[in-house]
Length: 267
Ligand SMILES: [Zn+2]
Image (cartoon, rainbow, N blue to C red; front, top):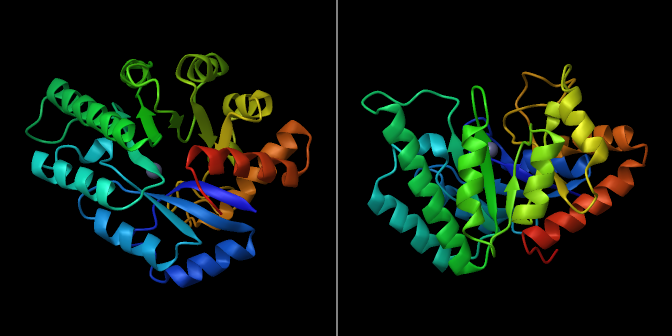
């Protein structure tokens, strides 16, 4: 059994979720954590999780690139939904300093609003006893990582997972020791020129990482460019097993244990 800990099932790219589920289960991926990103996907997301609870657990949040599209009233509504319906975690939230600010926004104001939302998401996670799925991305340097790290530090009871981890070993060690956090790996590991991430995956303590697809994005080799599905977490598992010289079953087992604990799943 493999759990895809980060995907987006509310996507126009998916016409037939029953098929996505059948194809994923056929690859050994029997559960996934679908992440919310914007006001448009919170309710469809809850609906999907309700309609296939054995396959999908839901998280809600505002993705950093959506913070200028979501009003304060909508943010409060999302918080209410999380109080009303059980969530696996709060996600996907974080800081994205990679893309430029949208029209009408200064870079400083855009980033400041992202930090306000991230802080609110941590407060929400803390009040609900949940963990958090984090996205950080910079064009160069580590500003988004450091800023998210500084906010996370103020919420010692909330464990963060730095999803789609592309950092180095030193960053990973700080996430583990200072935040009691985790990292998760995507199909990026299967791409050429990702030796640095592969080195982290080869070294990472087995209780500190999970696996994910970030589908419908980031299809692993040899499916690059094709709409990704949770089932392809299998290729991430296979690659990590190869890097660590263990069997895929061992990687499936430890990452499933980590995911069950992190997202409080009773599967
Ligand atoms: Zn994502």
